Every structure is written in structure tokens, then in C-alpha cells.
Image 1: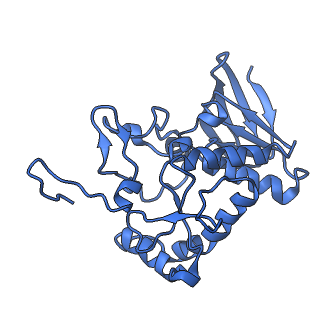
Image 2: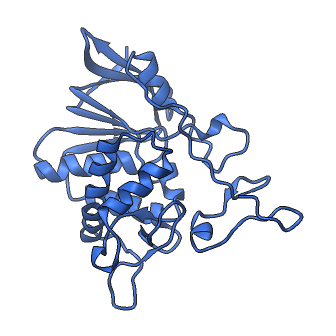
Image 3: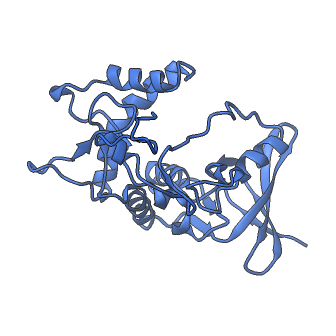
Length: 269
């Protein structure tokens, strides 16, 4: 018999997307609303989000020349005009408040000399709008969100628990099946809603900067459950990875003006 665990909301994945979703649910209800499960095949602070280095883009200083319109344009242009433009506009409007929200929750952003949040240039952006925390922005964002979650008691974490399927009956979500990898037991998470936040699928490639855990599990879960998956051809590729380790040279190196040369000293990008 499978162990049955009941929660209102089940979040599959414990990276930045999963923790930010959990923090939003908990803060909106002050921990007195729906019960929440964070289910991850990893220990909570081991998600690949901790590896993000470069920065998070947001228009913080429009009085200095940046604008939401310019951020939206850079994003749409960078997508080769394939991005959903309504989503982009919503995204760039939300970004500044997200950066300030993280600061209020304790995020140690790097600072300018005047004490305000620092920003730096980044690939694809026509203005210095990458908000960063040294070269460990992902780690610090994860730690900030995890620390925020400690304020609330209405949630539970299930580390090293591998979700194997999404259960849908009569067109509605009912729960998730999973294997507790610590003891091999079968678990059924019964819930009213599910958020898939399992990250990317970089391990499809032999050479990748992503951790060995980025195997596209959530994409497979959604596909097998009959849920729509969109724009699966969109994968992020960095042109600066160290061979053979796969270690990434941060995108900030190019944002600061670095460029690539071939063996003849010619620029190749």
C-alpha cells in the first residue's frame, strides 16, 4: 500500500520557481491558508538554481535612462520576435517590484557607492539592468526565499522524493505519485492543485553547464498527463563553457565587453 499524504497545493521542484511560488502562497495567506507540499528529488537547497551567477534583469532606474519599453523591446528582439508580447510586457512590469521584494525579504544585493542596488551590463540588454549579488545571485536568491519560508508553518518539504506521474481524473488534477528515494517506498500526494517547477532539460546534451539533476522530469510528467507543453525548441545556449568540464564562464563576462576569438584571433560571434 502506498502512503497517502494530503495537501491543498503540491509544488513539484524546489528551485527558484518552486520556492517563489511557495513564498507567494504563504505570504498571501500569512501561513493560514492552503496547506502546501514542496516535493523535490533533491535536498531543498541543492536545486540547480543555486548555480545562477550573472544577474536578474529589471528596470530599477528609469530616471537614469532605462525604461520598461526598452526592456520589453530587448526581450522581444532577443526572442527573434517569437515571444508572447503580452507576457513580456507583464514580465518587465513585475520585475522591478520582484527585485525590491527580495530585498525586503533579506536579499543581499550588491550595492553602488551611493548604497542603492547595483546593476551591470548583460548580454542582449541595451541598458545596464542585471541586478546581481556578487557572482552568486542564484544561491542568494534561493537562500532568501528559503529563509522567508521559515516564517510560516503551513507547509511541508519532501526532499529526495521523485515524482513519477500526475494523476488526472475527469479532467481535474487529483494528485501525484512518487517514490521516496530514501527508503524506496511508494507515496501518493493527494491535492487540489499542482505547480510543476522542475527546471530544464540540459542533460539532453553531452556537454552542458547544467547539473546532472536537470533531466526534464516535469516536462515528461506534463506530457504523459496530457497537459500542453509549449515552445520546446527554446533552449538557452551559452557560447562560453569550459571544455571538458562544462563549467560556465558567466554571461556577465560578455556583458562587461568580453568577446570571443578563434585560433586566428578573429571574432567569431
